[in-house]
Image (tube, rainbow, N blue to C red):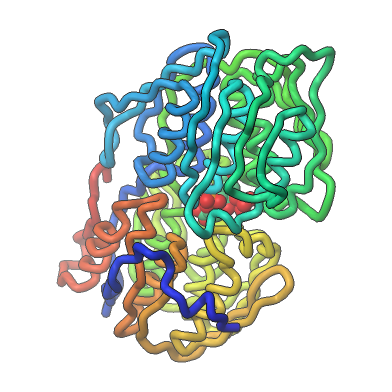
Length: 466
Ligand SMILES: O=C(O)C1=C[C@@H](OP(=O)(O)O)[C@@H](O)[C@H](O)C1
Ligand SMILES: C=C(OP(=O)(O)O)C(=O)O
């Protein structure tokens, strides 16, 4: 289904087309992947409500983390860049918000297109007593928000949204951190459109004087791994979270312990690089892969093996070898991994089905619609189902692939560009949302395919730490 929206440029500021590098033989690279967006932004927010100064080591520096930092500073946290050990920028030192101080006045929060900012920060604003006006990119205004607004109203916080239930809105008072309580506050929300609605409330729950119970009512909650991540980072900071009942979470009141943490690489963003091994019949290694993680991107190990790769995990390095075959797949609940999986499906040996991802219609763009439109634009065949996609491989031809300001649509196009002549990616700068280094890393990766080398030599893209 191609719509008018999908024939329009992604953003008013879209960069000119980026000719995607083609790889005519297998890539052979070690890629140091920058830090996780989801972990960086959770730890930043927790540090802002912690009981003392915290440090984030090897954090992400991207548009989404910059927006989170600006929002937290506006609400009273101190955040400084300090010497770091990460290859992609300094560490971050965070001084928490002083909730004992009377807070007056109003602040503006730019959410950009960051779900973690637009969903996680409003409940924090409601803790402070400040009036906070939230807005974001044009498409941010269409992303689902009303469960956060509803939850704040259930907690007695005034939210002025002119009845829209979406950005822009103002959290206009409420001082949840000091509200009297004789038991946990309770909210009931429908989180079927985003797990971030639940995470947003759990993250601040311990700072409510009686704690917080969040109950979900409605269809199933998507991206459950991300709620697991929220629960785990809270518990690691000494917060008691009961997640034992289905669709219900209870956060006990108490201090959020200050921390010193090293952020894991972003395993979702590792996806396009690992997919390059399959798309080119090459080898890609990602060092620093955690032994244990709550990141959904750990699923690459099983997904890529099912699609035909040899996958090995040894000494903290994940190695993916393309075998020349890309098998069709029937995969459920791939969450934010889906655009990368869809690129491989378009190159696979038969039709694939992705299910359990209806909520991708509320991501940076309507990803189901966008993926179908762009696969078709490339000469492939795909269709939307109620909760996902069917992708039928066809011979593809190069063209300008639209990004819709969506970093994962840009990287989807880059993967196909490795295997198809003449792919041009619109607005490659959209990758700056979570990985500003993407164009350089990708160019380095593709160059390893062209380089003649003796069989024993391992090529390397930014092989720092490898
Ligand atoms: O909490 C988080 O950090 C995220 C949760 C998920 O959102 P949805 O539940 O809306 O899919 C994921 O897709 C997003 O990229 C990051
Ligand atoms: C859905 C995503 O982002 P956000 O955090 O903006 O929801 C994503 O990065 O795939």
